[in-house]
Amino acid sequence: MAPDVFDCVAAYVRDVCGEGPVCVHVDDARECQIKRHPDYVKFRSRAVAARAARKPSQLWESMVSMGRMSDMRGDNKWRMVVVDCLTPFLRARSWSISREFYCDLGDVRSDMFEAALDVWEETAKGVPPREVPTLMVKAAISAAYRRANVHEGESSTSDVEDLLMFEEVVMDSTLKASSIIHDADPRDPAIVEQIRGERTGALWQMYGLWEVVNRYHEDLRAGRRPGLRGILATETMLARTWVTGSNFYYHISDFYPKFVAIPAAAEALGIAKSTAYKMVRAGSFPCLTTRMGSGIQVPTEALMRSLSIADIIVHLDDVENGAAHVGGN
Image (cartoon, rainbow, N blue to C red; front, side, top):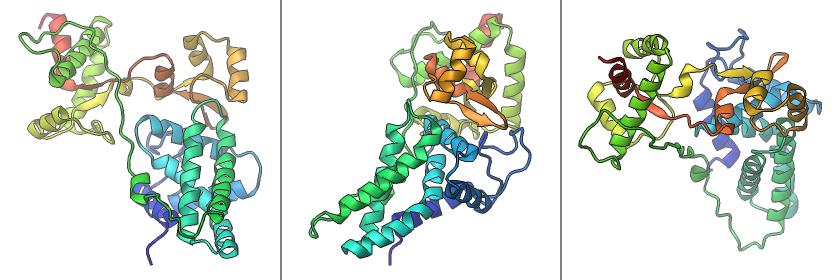
């Protein structure tokens, strides 16, 4: 018997989470201020217990916030973690609906899964994280009852493999600089990529940040930091990775703090601090927030998006070339 969609989600989540510690704050236990983290089995148990208590849960708020952050990176890991932690509340209902209305259990669960993901997409803006799990469960159960009223000859068209594929990431990049590259076609994607990197390096050199950037590059070359991962590689990136033997691409946000406090984010957005806290409570703050310990933080990536600052991808060779050009080397 083929596994149903809930089993597929569970297997997928356990594969991406592995046996190591699970961090719902920054997704990397090594970078988190909170030092104790459970493995996924214990984490899921806590999440299910918190949901069963029917009380506001900081854990679930953090899970949804982390899911939104992962979405921005084109990674559906935490979205699937949320779904997996909700399945105990959907399995029993799917069994009862299947038996009562003589529906195929696999079809019922596929519809529930698809409805839950639709709600996840629909609530990406303007809905407080604490409300999202309840809306997903309600939509899933409604979809199951709709399946119960479908004619017997109709079959489900959902494809589990398609639903579990990683989303493609669309990187926003604009050409706004002259390059040290001469006699090249500026419409060539490879040339555009180099110009972006050179312009970034030139700016960091002019702002006096090159020493910090250079240390980062030394760590990349020495293998102490990972390059860009979890994103759809372009032909140019694949070619350069093959030549260098390493991945020296990274996002410029790697140089910024991963999170900023609400007052700093409010100032950047032109919002009064008191108004910002009210907006966070109402779920109307312009960008994603996440709870860390007793405080609320704003992911830098989310703030950059709200300010229309593109988190571009650059190659360290291009950045160094641009810095050297400005520095007269």
